[in-house]
Amino acid sequence: MTTSTLLASTALPLTAQRTVKRALSLLEKHLREPGALFTSTNTARDWLRLQFAGQEREVFIVLYLDNQHRLLASETLFTGSIRSTEVHPREVVKAVLRHNAAAVILSHNHPSGEAEPSQADRQVTDRLVNALALVDVRVLDHLIVGGLDIVSFTERGWLPG
Image 1 (tube, rainbow, N blue to C red):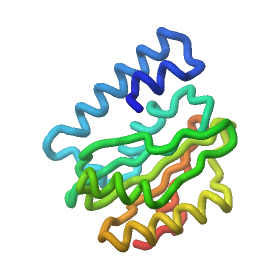
Image 2 (cartoon, rainbow, N blue to C red):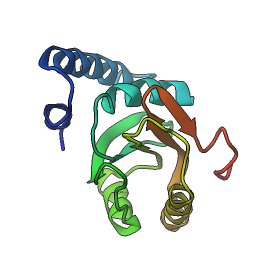
Image 3 (cartoon, rainbow, N blue to C red):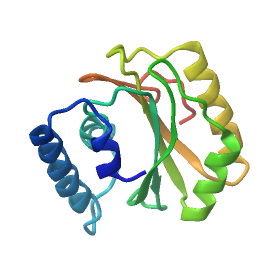
């Protein structure tokens, strides 16, 4: 699903959708420039706040990174309901291999605005870490976006270092 498709399905007014789309475009362009790295969660946070702006349903996004943690691609893999989305580790592994990624940042939103991870969020993250480790791909972080708040699994010490 493209950024424009995602924005068209949100509750934001058309002018706000255009502004968010332009901001995403500029940030993505910056992230693809030589030397732009996802070495801190702040870069990913800025991009994700814009990506999830106005979403009414849960969306699961993967940022695919190379060995130097440069952005190769981003992709919405799963879209769910207002309360949840079903994440399939097999599909994540297939997508990671398709993009030839060495590392990933996982993210999804909580349309309720509450960024606190659920037990199910932690369990699916553990399953993804284990599945991706089998193909030598590191999960650098799982970020949950709830409005302006973002919870980082890495900052909480929930991902292996």
